[in-house]
Length: 59
Image (tube, rainbow, N blue to C red; front, side):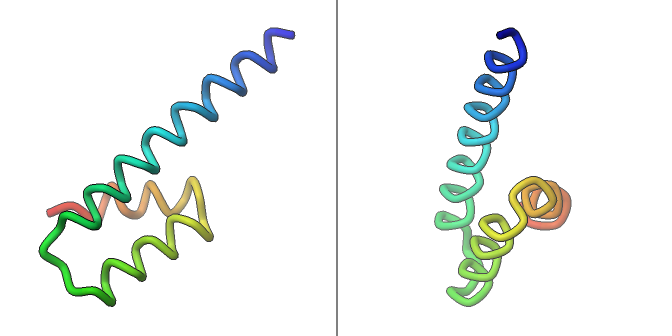
């Protein structure tokens, strides 16, 4: 039972970080293509995409 609660908590944390990333991407001054590509990367590679975005996305 504890594993389910931790998984649910981690899932919620992941969702919050993804929503934060989407908001920051949309508000950024990057071009439309760059914004779309970042969103696609985050959607197709959920954890890896977020890590890549955190390292290289926000400037």
